[in-house]
Image (tube, rainbow, N blue to C red):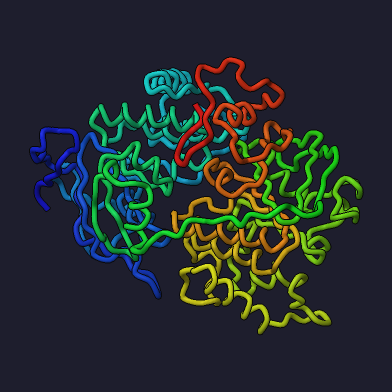
Length: 536
């Protein structure tokens, strides 16, 4: 592939010539019915944060899994530091100096940090020595971590630090990061970015996948863009707007969500003083939760992962039950009702975990549509499933929400994460619920797909449904919410009108200081949250 030539904005305009550290040429990987990577070629160099951009199903995950040795390409070649690079396994990749931090953490909650790190090492040193190395590396890179802490007691951001430090102890040349900020607070994002900039300054190459385009613009030096498995271009993302990047990815103009102005109607669902233990070993107890959501509005609930989001959704969906009058659907006590009874009444929910919770992995989309819609859409008669109705519902979801899949007979686990997310959310919305509760509705979705999901939630509310959106994406919540509350350590703050909320107010709410007077300790004027901004 040879040498790459790029112009750096802000320099004297001369072309900068550099020898690539990683070269990929003509890479192809096909599965039955789909070509995931089709003649993919790109190069990346030392001291660079290189973004891989593309909509869901564009082939990004297949590409990095090939670089990391999890997949073998059908055709093409790679070079690393000028040598032929063809890893047969992640072990080979690690030996060559390639490490990867996955989107989903692979940690054991009942083990401590040092024990989890040891499990990811080829030949771990004695535990005392390893603990010292973990402390040294964590301090060097600004990722404070106690080697003796149980992983089950760590926040999502701290768990990610475990994964990163496990990689850094291998002293990699190339670090692959797949959606690294999806579960982080704004403060943790800032810490991660400082770490990545330090690694870049040391000459590391970082391959970075994210759907958060403002982050790409703030962090990345170069971007390779994929569409339908092919490389369609490359650019300096710092010279593009987030919207321009999104439109380059999808190949068309991006439609932004638009809310319809209306006054909320009557209270559709309310909770009064709900306290409930978590069913998980390291879960979060709900503490005196009270809320109400009206028809025609979207109540946004923000919070860092692990503060009771799963428990709140379980309480609202009926997976965990409570005293009958602790939850009211209008005037009807439903606290003791299970999920099927609530679904029949029009209370629907979509949990965060798509595969295994929201869908049965080995069932096809028709069967998964029947599991969710059999009560609301009357798919069962005298004990028999009406498969024609189930197929029609699944095909309607696939068409309406642009689920990229060969057909409704495809099993759930065969879909990419983003396409499965579109199916799960669409399956619930198209049942026309009276109350819809969703946790992380656009997690892992590209900009166009996320905009479409948010618009569908706004449309559902405008039709008179009451919608509760639980999300860690503050931009998302500020874009679609009528009112905003924060969940912290199982406690829910008083809701505030979303319009005009400031960075300082949101930061205090997320941190649990709900009753503090705004302005205390402020070092500057208040501002409303803007797209892509983070809470300092």
